[in-house]
Each structure stands twice: as structure tokens, then as C-alpha cells.
Image 1 (cartoon, rainbow, N blue to C red):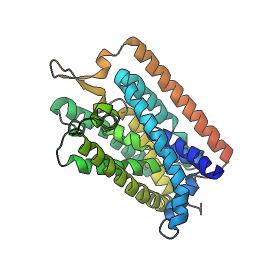
Image 2: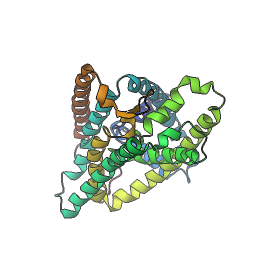
Image 3: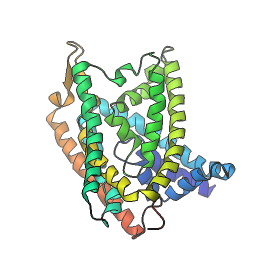
Image 4: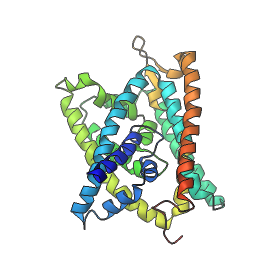
Length: 320
């Protein structure tokens, strides 16, 4: 039981990362010392189902418990201080860079390495900027249909779970970060954490069906990503981390340029960026949170890896 509860508590560290854009569940698994255990359990799930299930159960329950608590808290914070919260997330994204730079510092960058970083940057920044501009000028956003009954919103739930789970396995990238860049993070959180929705009969099929599809997509994405990352990092380790590095840098841009930073005036139905009416106090708090989060996570991550010594991450090429 002691071991079970210890794994449960370690699972909560992953759950803490799940609702926070910029904090990678994979990174937290490495820092808490259960990355190897998860990878091995998933890899052996088919041949040693019972043992793998017993290993993953407390970790999954801990992660789920903390994730629910985190989503509820973030929903409240985003209603009152969207810029400050985005600044906090941006600082965490910046502070997570040691997870990737630790993998790159031993190798000099060549032309193709720089190219991969640029591509990663353009993809991450482009997703946020493009989706926000389309929403601002043309009014289209997947999030606008999140509480509707259009048929194609259900495959979106499935895809959201799959993409989020895949991203959460990659050290340095979080599933919530990807949802945030796509403009789906706040709408998804609002759908499931607005208690009045649960009392509306019209919303229940969407909530329950959407939740089920997200879970199914997440389970599939988790298994696929673990197997895929293990193979990819063993064959294309440096190239993969170069792309991840660029993606993290591009995510910094999209943290502040995405559809969630655009609001609609109820009286005139015109759209505006939240930056237009933020009080001075929120700007000050936002800057403090950005710098503080970046420095804190940078120091914690660097210290944790320093204790591990020169050994690389568990999912690296073992022959290197």
C-alpha cells in the first residue's frame, strides 16, 4: 500500500502538469522518477497486462485527481485575469527549455539543425497566430461550436484527446499547450467545469459523450506516443529535440496570440483583444508571474537534471 500511495502521489505531479500549458507531463514524469516505469508498463502492456495495469493504475488515478482540481482553478483565474494567466503559462514554457537544451548542448548545430528549429518555431507560432486572425476577421473558431450539436464536434473531442496525450508524452511539450495554441483550451475547460452545464439536459449528451471521446482519444494517443517516441528518439534523437526546441520557442508567441485572447462585445458583437482593457495592475502581475515562473521552473529543472548527472533521459538511444 505504501508503494501504491507513493505512485499515486507521483501521479499527481503529472496531473498538476496536465491542465497547465507550458508544463510537460513527460518532464514531470522524468523529475518524479517514474518515466521509465510508465514507458516499460506501456511497452509491456500486451504481454504482461496484469502487471502493467497494476503499475499504471495509481499513477493514472493520481494524475486524474490533480488534473480535475487544476482545471477548475484555472477556469476561475482565466475569467478574471486572462493576460496574467497567459503570462504565467508563457513563463512556464520558457522555463521548461532545460528539458530540451540538455539534450542539445553536446552537439553543434549544422544547417539542417537550424532549419528544423525554424520549422518548429513557425509551426507553433503559426498555429496560434493563424487561428486567432481567422477568428478575429472571419468569426470562425472551432471553440464557437463547442457547446453546439453539430456532428463534427464529436470527432474534434476525439482528436483533442489524442493530440493532447501525444504531446504530453514529449518532454518539454504539454498537451494543454497544444490545446491552448489551437484555441480549444479555455472552451474545453469551460464546458466541463461550468456547473450549470451539468444541470442542463441539452448539454449532458455533449458533456458525457465529449468526455468519453476525449478519454478514448487520450488512451490511444498515450499508447501510440509512448511507442512512437521510444522508436523515434532511438533513431532520430538530435533531430527530434531540435524540432521540439523550435516548437517551444514558437509556443511563446502563441501563448499571447490565440483565439482565447479575443473577446466579443455583447452589445456591439465586435471582437477585441483582451489587451485593450486590461488594468495596469494585471500587466504588472503578469510580468512578475512571467519572470518568476520562468526562473523558478528553469532552476528546478536544471537542479533536478544536475542531480541525475550526465545520464540522458530514459527514452534516448541507449547506444549513445
